[in-house]
Image (cartoon, rainbow, N blue to C red):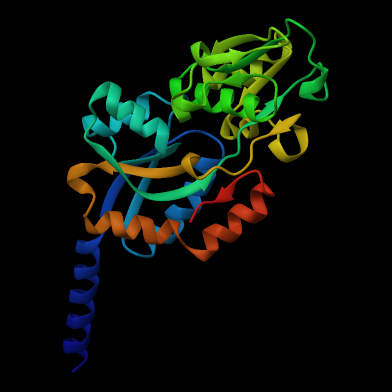
Amino acid sequence: MKKIILAAAIAAFAAGSALAEDIKIGVTPGPHAQIMEKVKEIAATKGLNIEILEFSDYVVPNQALADGDLNANAFQHQPYLDNQIADRGYDIVSVAPNVNFPMAVYSKKVKSLEELQDGASVAIPNDPTNGGRALLLLADKGLIKVDETKGVKVTIADVTENPKNIQLVELDAAQLPRSLDDVDASAINTNYAIEAGMNPKTDSISLEGEKAPYVNVIAVRSEDKDAEWVKTLIASYHNDEIKAFIAEEFKGAVIAGW
């Protein structure tokens, strides 16, 4: 009888091991990486082994996913993904929301947007969707006016009123925290702000409101969207432990989007 029980246990263990799956997920440094480390722990209990790869920009993770070097990525909001698909023809899709990072404006020279003088320089991300997001933030706060018919696709060319003659400086998103010594203010994505030691709730001079289009997403290749490992990944992310970790770790600077 003991031999039968032992054989059954070994068979069960072998079956469980066979069900385990290994995947690679691309993230940006900072909150996305920190959250994914927690997701990795939960996914491991469900038989999904996650290898986390960090990328310092917003361009490479989608290319790596499309090329098959990654199984998924979690770093971008839907408008950015839509723009990448339109520009580069990627056959990738979002499968679930993850978190929202309210964009904020930071400065070492002024304490509010109202203090900006005529001709002041304001840096914004140089990619179309995050640049547009920054312009909408500045417009929402009354610093400029933009062509509202452009929606989230607004660009510098769509600025219709600029009473303070603000000089809009386009820089790579990852470089924006370092731009604060050279410009009067800078609109910075929260993941890069936090990585640089800044909290949008306490250190910014202006904070974006919660906007649903900018909730970040988990993306995979279209051929994988119905795979079992994708369901496991989503279930591991949309977990009460993850939501509690986000609330405790980031104090409102990062918000669970599900």
